[in-house]
Image (cartoon, rainbow, N blue to C red; front, top):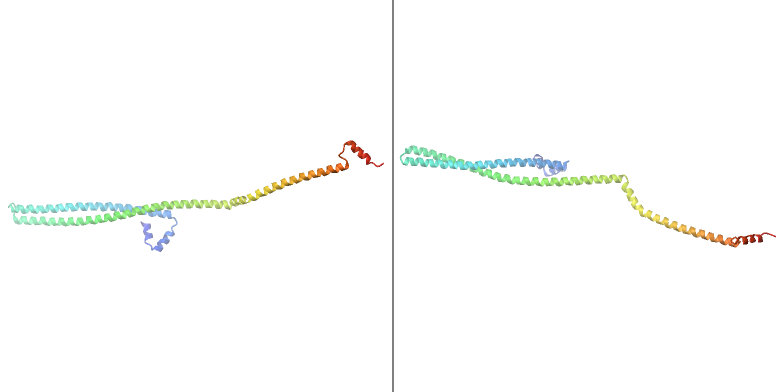
Length: 242
């Protein structure tokens, strides 16, 4: 775990500074995970070797104890043979003594093998606990990596959207739309006012034309121009000087 060891070997302020200066958190996290997985593989290999050593030590204990029991039985047989007269007593004692020495040697070997077996079993238990912790740590940082990638994706999408909005705003499109939105009520009011004013003006124009027509008719009536043609000629004759 070279990367993590370099970080952990630093003091807390230096470690925080080193972490803050990482340019690519995703890449560094992936590197840390790769190193932890390598440590996991090495630990699993070491665990299998320890278990194999514990098994061999256990088998050695059984074998040495069996040999010790066999040498003890050999010593008993030698003494029994001497007692029955089938073997010289001094020779029987010598051989029986050698058999007992071999018995003690094998018992000592069995004790050493048993001690080795116990140490291996303690190491296996400790290593299994470390492996469990390492697996949990790897699982935790795998989840953290997924969250980090998701956050980066969301951040990149947000930045892209912000850039697009900034680009749109920089071209004046958003400003133009906002101005159009603000001017729409004013233009509607102006249009309504113009329509009302035009209708009122048209009405007043018609009234003025009608009034002019009435005045013109009244003047013609006063002058007698509205009478029949005969009356009109008479009026012309009367108005001619004598």
